[in-house]
Length: 555
Figure 1 (cartoon, rainbow, N blue to C red):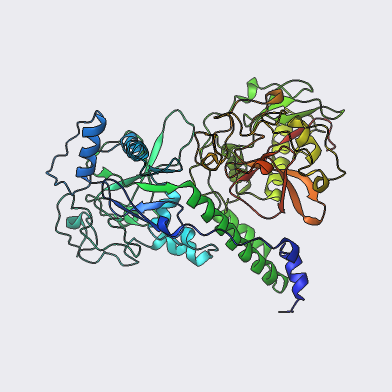
Figure 2: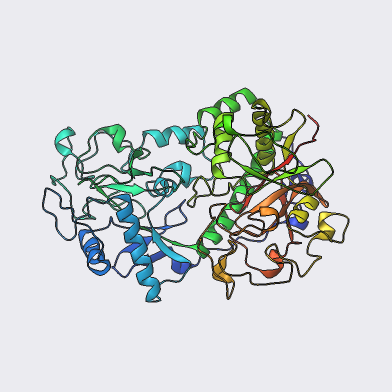
């Protein structure tokens, strides 16, 4: 491959020496492991921000919860269980209530802080726990993806070796485990990280929250009654009603610490940037079959969740200057006084359900989707500036085809100046975003009078690091969670920071980012005038975007 001079390579990779990122913070050593007041160990897992319980929740733990919380629950399985067997007959709500009880119990005793909590794992976290390469490796190959579909928690062998897991051994030729029903937790060989019963014993609840009338959950890992290989594969996901109650279903908890997660996310972004740099250099010396790449993208595209709360297109009214508007995805737009041609601005940041509708329709994947809990009404994050622009182009075509916007109208990202006006900051000095950044020292998106910290529960920030402030969210929040600001617009102060259209003047490949996020806590960073900037092809778990609808835009 042709060698490039070091400076040129750095420029191409977006890592000019003047902009070399500082080392990412390392998660505190003491958070590599945790023990609950019930005596359960939690350990760190590669690819997961949360610590995983070594064992499934036991009958003893469950009975302690019932006795102390007075939770109404009376299920009894048709077989006998010891105190060290996994609790069964657990619905998703039961599991979530247990986690909430343990969190509040330990916070009240000051054994964990407000940034720490117990919960049910997400599907991605369970993927990491069971060792799937898509969560363990930062840059997976096609072979890795195929391997994920073939592997079992114990390896590639089928039938499983004897004494591997508590399964329906009478139905699996050559397999024996010695237990007709549940087994004491930890009876079989653990994973490399020390997790027991990732296969068999009881199905385990996972939950990725979404806003929907009928909740569903996902079970992972199989149980003492399962024997079909496809159901016992590491990647198998069993979607069931959230109120399912069976003698084969239990759960395990994860323990998360928001500050540890923030450090890990920063570290992950640093590693991803190194990989992107390597790929850029490789691509300069290799021919690329674009058709092959596109075919692979489509093959492994994110399927997206069906959105059940879309508006009826027949009831939607065409966009009109000066009036609120709802588009084909149910996104709300508010009138503004910016510009002469009439602009409508997204009331909220673009939601996960909006973004996933584009991914599904375009056959795209979401490789940098944040690993924490994300519902359909949460803001989309972990996407590039170019992704945001492509979404706007797609949405323009959709709403033009539906005759909801004129042929000359277009969706786009707000400019830096427009974003300031949306946040009621109209008197900024400076000719460009760099010169305007931080110039006004008194204006905040939630108050023009210099109020810091903001009133509690008014904006989603890193509350654990802002004395005198609190909010209800560990990560992102549903987009309508905070009080609206000027003109009914929400989310300008926190939740996720937002890409803007403008280049960052000293670096043509970088773009402006505005607003605080769930990771922001420093006063200067929360000023309305504060700007961030990043390479247009970079992503961050706290950066999303909102759309502007320009009714008089050129086609």
